[in-house]
Image (tube, rainbow, N blue to C red; front, side, top):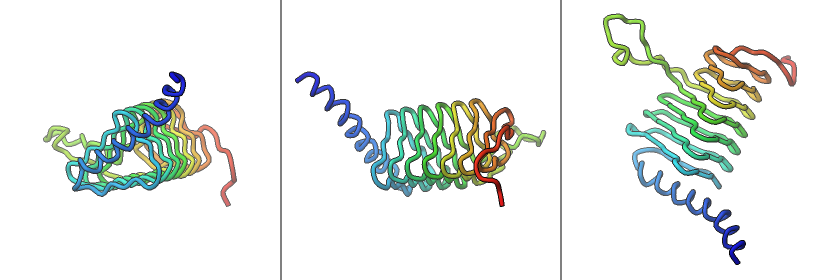
Length: 191
């Protein structure tokens, strides 16, 4: 009996908590367009910050593990079906972040669509504003642990751990480093 109760609590407990988190997020942000299509898992610590509204659309089968956070400043985040965000992934969006289907984000990775301006010596850095660029991440992309993404990543690209993507990464490549550079190409050859 104890084993059965443990099994039920492990299988149904997280699902019930996830459903409650979804309802809380939607209720908490009536000024934002939030949509979860189909079954989506929201792990403990899921956080959505959108004081200026915004759009957050998630496809079916997406999994947000512990500590996921998305900060929307009037922007739009779209996440394709079957993508997985492991622990403590952060998305910061003012324009648009499009994530394809079946993508994987490793622990403590960050995707941002803007950079602080800092070159004007007559103003403090925080008063200079941002350079904003919409981000597109293709289908089947793997972004491993502790990466920073501030440029597009092409279909099926693989980004090595601790990399900083400052320029677009082509499809079917392995990129790594600071700044990330293509170190290998695989898959179909371009026509």
